[in-house]
Amino acid sequence: MNSRSNVMNETPAQATAIAPSAVPWSRQMYWCVRRELWESKSIYVAPMVGAAITLVACSISAMRLPERMRAAAALDPVEQMAIIERPLDMAGLFIMGVTFLIALFYSLDALYGERRDRSILFWKSLPVSDLTTVLSKASIPMFVLPVLTFAVTFVTQTFVLVVSRAVLATSGANTLAAWSHFSFWHMEGMLLYHLVAIHGILYSPFYAWLMLVSAWAKRLPILWATLPPILAGLFEKVAFNTSYFAGWIQNALGGGSGRAATAATSMSMDSLTSPWPGEFLTNPQLWINIVVAAILFALTIRLRRQRGPI
Image (cartoon, rainbow, N blue to C red):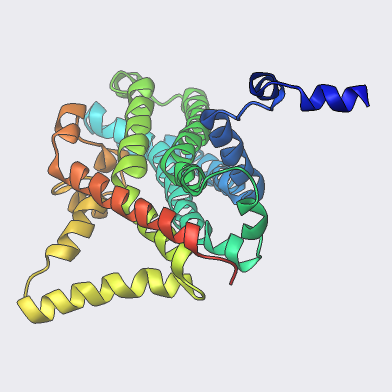
């Protein structure tokens, strides 16, 4: 009886003191991102599988390096270094391509999957807002995958470099002049910058569009994601004989004006070199992409709040 009366006599301040404290937003984001990694194992499994395939292929290719270097003995040291760098370039491009596809498919299934398996009912019962949920899912293709891609590529290229140097050293090929033009840390720094700036930030409208479709579509989200942009481009071309929409997409995918054509005709990491930070931050394409992505993410949050299981 006394304990009951004590509870009834508690002041509001005392009741507030014993109430559980709210979970900080940063901690909510942390656990939401961890949940995405737990549920979508392809986020880190696919890059590792791609790295393993790349290691085998590049190791076999490295065995033929001495023969190629002897054939290129009369070339300039810079051109000889390009031959040595080719396995490193191919390793980086292959892993980057794998993780980019993972980012696209993840974005397309991020919200559709929880509606399809009805797990959205459970996740909505938790004290986590739709804003936090959508932002945590958006952080996977925009931040987590670029950093993971860099880490996997760094380890892979380091191993390929060690194998290449060992093979060339034991073959007796004279490559000292060529190695003097090689900077591994510069190459890795530019790779990290490219992944964060281009794959993370500049590609954000594509991830946002796919997540919007993922939150809206009742079936066949891949069809709804690809058909409207194709029809929009065709309508503009037929009606106005212009290609501004297709040009914007090409420009965004290329990382800036004129870079898409270069990347399409070259298999070197140099073709993916990003603009310098000053040029990147003053590029209108960047800010247009950010505004478009913000609008699409806002619509995605609103849809996620309204939509239920399929």
